[in-house]
Image (cartoon, rainbow, N blue to C red):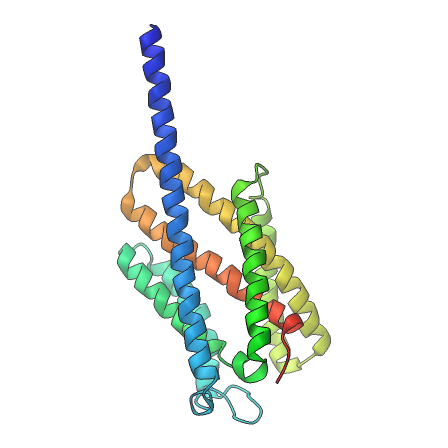
Amino acid sequence: MADYKTARVATTGARTAAIDEGLRAYMSKIYGTMSVGLLITALVAWAVGSNDALLAVLRDPITLRPNIFGWIVMFAPLIMVFTMGAMINRLSAAGAQLFFYAFAAVMGLSISWIFAVFTGISIAQTFLVTAISFAGLSLWGYTTKKDITGWGSFLIMGVIGLIVASIINIFLGSPAIHFAISVLGVLIFAGLTAYDTQKLKVMYLQHVQHGDREWIGKAAIMGALELYLDFVNMFMFLLQFLGSRD
């Protein structure tokens, strides 16, 4: 009997260790894929934004207002996010990863204008502040024992409100609305960073017993996309406060 109990404890401990190792590999895949996506976005944004001829393809050289191609590029990332969500079950894990990197490149095009508006130093400083904030919030979301899944519906409603308000303010051009959107944007995406990290961890623990490697691979790519969006949006909203204009 004692031998049976000992074997059972050993088996349980081995299973727990395997789950922990798998979770670490899963989260490492998410952060690694996200980091590559951010690097692609940064390189594309810098290459286009620092070249007047390339930027002129998307925006007026004087006013920096988007032309027809600029409008297309501006809304293309949003369309690609919905497309990826709808097609994820039909894509392989490798296909989903390639789609994510293509999305990251298009996102770089859509935010390339920041290099024509803000100084390079202030962009780098804002990126560093965002990286530190993101790391702290994501770590808290991963390690906290508090259940923050209840934040989800509230935060998603906040994102929808931000999108609607931002589109409206494109035509209104109100500085007060712009300031309010920036403040709320930082808070909402800070909350989403912690929420999404915990959600990804819980999701893995719920599905790991099935041993579906294809699902795990796709889930890691979708997780990278979610955290990537949290990072980029938090960076863009913080840039409104911390960025120094040329």
